[in-house]
Length: 406
Image (cartoon, rainbow, N blue to C red; front, side, top):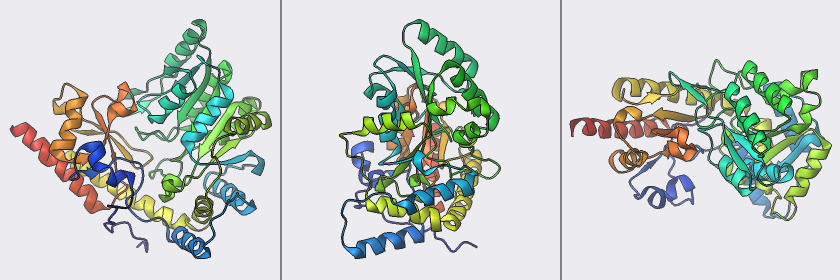
């Protein structure tokens, strides 16, 4: 039995929590049960909380930097959890994965070059491409029986066509594990992708922020681990950027701390150059939270993973028995569930969104937020107490029942 608490109904109202205190602004009502933003509705690991309280007691919050102990915590975590050996020089600390993606594209792209994304995918990927005046190359995932796979044959054709049309394909922003469809990519899939990108000389930005949130039976493989283990990628490794954080894992996203791994000295220099002039220093709270999470939070993480697994199984069973019109995409990682709502009978996404907001009174991420490929889908966050998850599902069940009877 876990000594850690995940079932307490924490009150996040009036805490400046984006997820809770923007309900009226985003969903049009305070009565909405928010199940959207990718943060958790439970407290972080006790070790993290304790260390931050100690820092508050110090009472001095001046400029800070990552000392050797911070680097060591990250290196130890990656070695212990993923058998990935990362050198200190490869690590750069940032204020978040999204800023890091933007900095990377700024460093490596020219206007009108093309950048690959794989819809339906995390919305800020699209924004990063636009921010850097690049062209979007959308390589949609293939969906079969509520399970998604990469379409690399189509991607190869798309790359050639884009290059021929004068929009050189320069980079790919990759989501691993994938948000929102919940895939944990297998080694064979990753190797096929890496070999294609190597052949076409394309940079890879691998967003692995959900790397620790994996369901039993699956294993996250960092792309860098595959690259380091094979001589065939000795040169291509210089074009790969890995983006990671403890923020989703330990519910510390508001502390704005992530780390970027770049093996190539030249690319690191270009990346640092791209950051010049921006507020990229880290808060001492973010750095200390990262360190204590990685050094002392592993037992808490394992307990959290068990709770998330139980929540996922509960959701699967509840929807199967009570709302069979909604199909649950097979989940392998993250705590974000991708729901296929196409059988509810709506003709437009706007109708589905209004139904969830006004009828069910649950705040979910609309599938279209992740691109056109997300049409008629919704994303639901299960990182919340079971009682709250059940309440959200009951609201959807009642609304769907009234829809069928009405």
